[in-house]
Image (tube, rainbow, N blue to C red; front, top):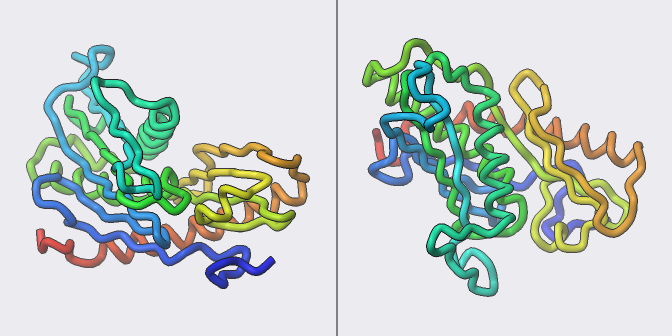
Length: 244
């Protein structure tokens, strides 16, 4: 099938990570996967959740939300502590994905909050959030290291995520909204720099998928995540937008 933007089936959209995008966060990254834009910020607070208090280790957690204008129809804001089920599922995914590559015993009793706010949604918001949050987390940990509040460097691996799926019987990588909304299969992959899986979320939406299709999705997803790792490294090698 011919894709709307002319990409090959295995090709991800253009991906960028703009560091230092806001002033006050220890880590701040505007993440772009095609027309999807997610602002990922990392802020450090003293203390840890009650179940970790006194154990001498830190904590990393994530939150996720979509701005009202991020979609064609206005999305209502979460109010009064009420968060919709999809946002809860995604922020739990973000948190456990990040914790999989952090040795919290090397931190002190501080919490790093990764807030992922979708400014513009065109498919793949959770995978863009995870990939961008890792860059923001790296910058926050660098700031903590400069403040001498780490026991040792706690980030043990890279982290990247991508969406894949089957549309009109064809496995595709990094689905935009038009593709995602008509996909027979929707899958999200989260991987480490060592090539190990943290999460494989996949389900048939319209028709069952074959083992051959699944293998194809996993292969093209892994290749796309390796590309994300290279883009992350290039972004970290540059000075942040704000010059911090």
